[in-house]
Length: 269
Ligand code: DGL
Image (cartoon, rainbow, N blue to C red; front, side, top):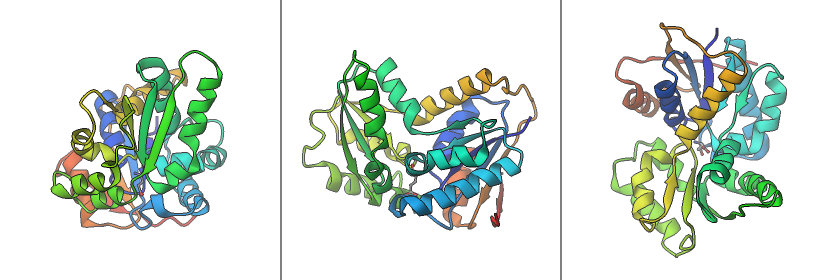
């Protein structure tokens, strides 16, 4: 059975890859970081679709049995195109819908905050997914969202465990816009790396949701449903990038240890 293909613009999706490996140690992972084209959050929907479908096809052509779009910007703007490109036999897991499901099923929330890239927030996908649930009746959730565009680039540059993300977040969050929220979605896969900085700026009662774990659980369920869960005891983790940068290498080593299988790959689809 093939590996799970996971991709993002850069290191952010590694938060999801790490959670997937921890929950599913018998699964092999092929991770693609599109470092030549980051940040996705500032790109047009058309360009995000072009990059994302190209990577998804590359992962499927490399034998991947399922795809995790470990990027909110790509999930919000390119999901339909990715699904169309890989066809009906490859399960595709996005960042948005599992988190919205989790909100309605597991969280006791009436007002949720969302921070993410400009591309994610302006796509309106979280808002549409929440509205769809609200229309079913039952629990009603109000969404307050705001783009925090500098944050992913700062993290990609290696500024985590550092004062810079805190200062960037303060500039975006200190006007009380999120005062009413009782939970907060980290709507960019880079943001779990600065989770503590986000928590510091919100009241302690706010539940800061952990999307990587939710996505890993969703992935596990999808593999079970499709009868493609691996029992392989010799699973591997392979990392590919479109531009081999020190930032990516250091990020990947932070999550997966010094001895990683990392290569630069040019996509010519
Ligand atoms: N980590 C990605 C996301 O979840 C992309 C960040 C970026 O490249 O702007 O949106």
